Amino acid sequence: MSDLLKLGVLISGNGSNLQSIIDHIEEGSLKAVIKIVISNNPDAFGITRAKKHGIQTAVLKNDDFKDKEDFDSALIKILKKNDVELVIMAGFMRILTPVFLKAFPQKIINIHPALLPSFPGLHGQKQALDYGVKFSGCTVHFVDAGMDTGPIIIQAVVPVLDNDTEDSLSERILKQEHIIYSRAIQLFSEGKLTVRGRRVLATTGSAQGDAFLINP
Ligand code: GAR
Image 1 (cartoon, rainbow, N blue to C red):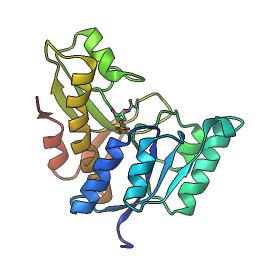
Image 2 (cartoon, rainbow, N blue to C red):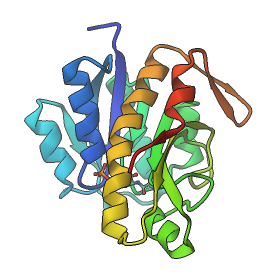
Image 3 (cartoon, protein in one colour):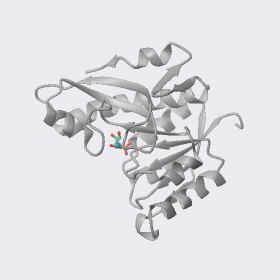
Image 4 (tube, rainbow, N blue to C red):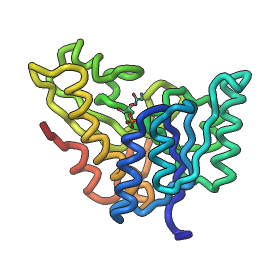
């Protein structure tokens, strides 16, 4: 147990990415342990999912803190207390402050529902539809001070179909999110990710293959 990578997962909502990480851990394809799930939304369904699997949870409400730094300091305290080695943002709808980034340098990753650097921020799927791109997808990346700007670990490509709605495209992208997030965490846990400037190089060929998944 002790050599498993210790994860802290941050959520704000449904938590389907959290669920996929739990499932990969339970089926043995992801060698990690979730030490704690933290939500800034007390009603997040992801909290229920975590409890169902006996995972410790915490809720930090945005309004209970005087500013962003104060919130992040409380977050850091809980994560450090639980010896968290990698912070996973899984639909966590907040921008982290430099205080937090300094506490977990190169140890925070995020998933975004678009092929970054296209369509950062909110509603990445709708942005892609409205723009008219023929392919979109999802991106797992290290988190830096910008909005969805950190070095890219894995991307999966998804076609945009003529009859797509925001919902249908989101659903197709989400399926890929559930595959690539656990793969990125597993590569990190194996110490296989090297960051050189903006580029993340994997010491095996597997991340390279993952980067070109296309699944209708
Ligand atoms: C996911 O699609 C994730 O990529 C997105 O929120 C959703 C959370 O779903 N994140 C962002 O848009 C961050 N900019 P989930 O709660 O079911 O995992």
